[in-house]
Length: 280
Image (cartoon, rainbow, N blue to C red; front, top):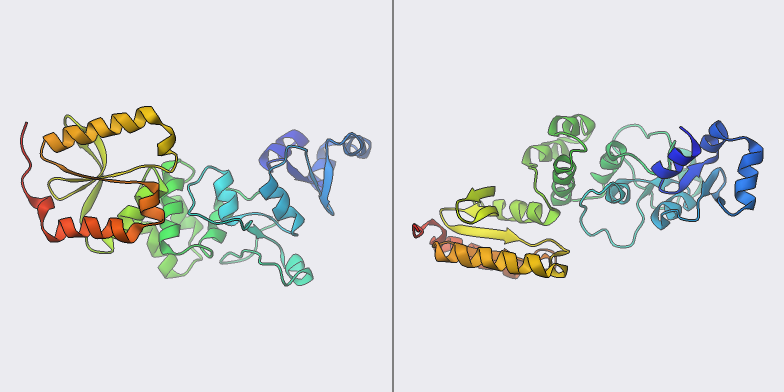
C-alpha cells in the first residue's frame, strides 16, 4: 500500500511503518518539514486535512474503531455524543490504564491502520451499544451492502448468544430511525410489515394491520422543502383512500418517543388499524 492510499484509508492519519514501506527516510523528512505531515504520537503522522476524530483516537494511544469508525464508513449509528471510540493493544492499556478504550470479544487485532474496517469496528461496537443499537448498526451495514447477514453472523461468532441472536432481528431498513421504530413496536407485539408497496401511494415505511401507515422522516428531512410537500401529498392521498397515517420525525423517535409510541399503541388498542379501508 502506498502512502497516498494509506492516508486515504486512515482518513489522513498513517503509521510510520506504512510510510517507510513506500517512501525513503529523506522523503518522509521532506514532507514533515513542508508541513504536509505532522506527528500525532510516536510512530504516527497526520496530513493537514486529517479527520479530527481519527487524530484524537490515534493521539490517545489507539486507533479509531467501534462506532466512530462505523460512522466514518457511512453506517447509521445511534447518537454517540462527543466521545471518540478507540481501541488499543495491551501495551497501550498498561501504559494508560485510565483511558477508556473499547474492547471486542476474542483476541485483539493488530493496529495496522488508523481506522478499523467495518468488521473489526463492529466487533467492538457490540460491546458499546445496547441491543437496539446493535440492530440499528447491523441493519445499516446490510442495507449499505458492506456485509451480508451471514457475514455479520460469522463476524460475531465469538460474541455471547444474546448478541448473536440479535442478528435474526435485523432487516434492511434504510435508516436507523426506521429500525428503532420497528424494534420498539415489536417489543409491544405490534405486528408491522416494513417497506410495503401500496397502489396509488407508493412504498411506505411500515403498514400495521389493514390501514395504519407509519412513515419515518430522516434526520435531514426538514432541510428538503420539496420532499416535505411531496410526502404531505402522499399522506393526503392515503387518507383519501381510507388509510390512517402517522408520520414520525427524528425528534419524535430519538427525543420524545414515549408520546409517539402511546399514540400508535392507542390506535392499535382501539383496533382502528384493522378496520377495512375505503376502495377507490
